[in-house]
Length: 360
Image 1 (cartoon, rainbow, N blue to C red):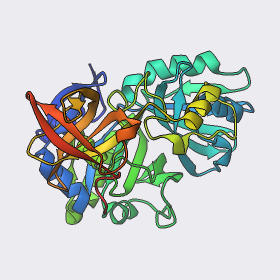
Image 2: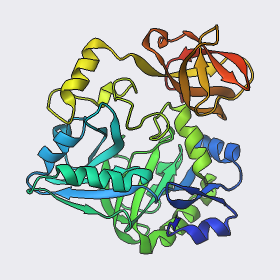
Image 3: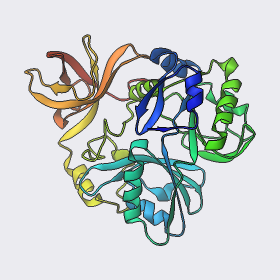
């Protein structure tokens, strides 16, 4: 197991450390519900340095990324970020990722920690000679400052104009006295905020500066547990749970980032799937009786016939409801459709709902 540059900070704060995606990561500090609600109401600080960062540049960079990702990279301009995914050639997804356009012919790809080597190998397999790619995952720490008070907090630490940054944009500059910091208005919580990319040697300095600047704003560190419940309330997919090598972008509800105005890996088959419809679809659901749905619990019809599986589930702290994501036959994917989740040999009724679960 690897450690992030902030391991000592987490231990000093009394975090519960657990193995995750090859790293020792903080699961929680003061408790899941406390951390979750503080992000919704104030501001939380996450260490997500386990994520991977690849840099792509050169004349062939745009054509390369157009080929390996589903979204239309040509729509990006310097300072803009895009959510996308990399399809494999068998109908599934290699990974979902963020594509940052930092400058002309210069991009940063942010990939999931558990997929860093797999993604690198896949991209290198398809990389043309006129594009350069560098894996700097071990050089960067990534801090997520999330919540309604994040902009007020971060504005204390930089002269960059954060007010003009709309959702999914990126800037580079000095923050907390540290040069060459990358800051973006992305995030995984649905409560707004920033993700801050800083060289490992400055990670503790950045952490301390953010915590100090956030003292009067109610800042608290938050761990992976709160990150998961926050993203699930938004209906955001988690790779390895809700999407994987065997789930297509179409059935996972990612048609909105799958653009057939260009050709990309497996685009012909995916276009046919879009036109003909997917057999199964990923849906959000709420339990109608007591219980908590967990990953891989069976989803059934009224008679107990298994028709799908839960991919993510929790008791949502912001909603005080048991919610989940799961794959069901397309004819049961419409809102209000009746399904059941098998929990400890009991069939618990549930209904399909429109995402996101949490609406600010």
